[in-house]
Image (tube, rainbow over all chains, first blue to last red; front, side, top):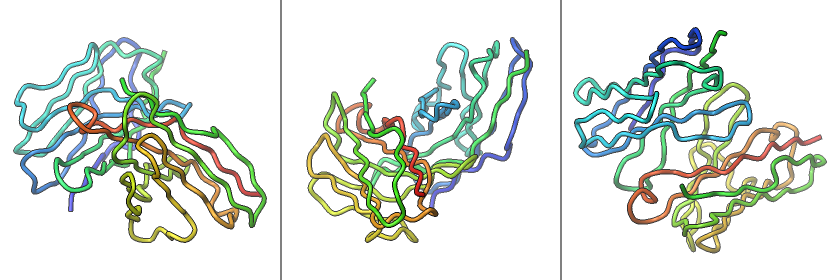
Length: 115
Length: 118
């Protein structure tokens, strides 16, 4: 069975600084997708970035980028130039490309941004 | 991106009554819908997966008779909490996937429903 692990329950970063959130996963599938979702206090799930396992190039979306290490099954999120609006819960998620395509979420990391 | 609307955003009901939560895909056909439950400061717990026109597949430990899921059309799924009790109070979130391209690999989330049973 697939698992997703986020080992950092909480992280803090100074405004304008850079922070990296960690995520590891376990799977026997060769093709899959990985995501980072942000959940602000409104609790609406917002897609931050996605990575397709067959793509070696790390995904980037403006200030957000990932470090995808397929062999190590690691998928970290780097937030550059942190802003107060980045404060939220961040969830790492996995989905395969066969079967029910259900998402498996990590336990989340609460990010605090300090002014 | 694709839009999923969940209604109501919050609901208070009396113990013993039933409450229905709707999840609609507004601009795409949702071949698969997922229902999650989220406890405070915790992750999303998958309750069930439903495909249009089929019976929902429930995760282990989820009471299918208490949490009735219907996915009668490609744009609507409903979750009915039957004979609700205070321990059913929680935040419920739906998500939907379509077919083809990003619609098939990304889940689009509703806004969530906060259920309080008194």
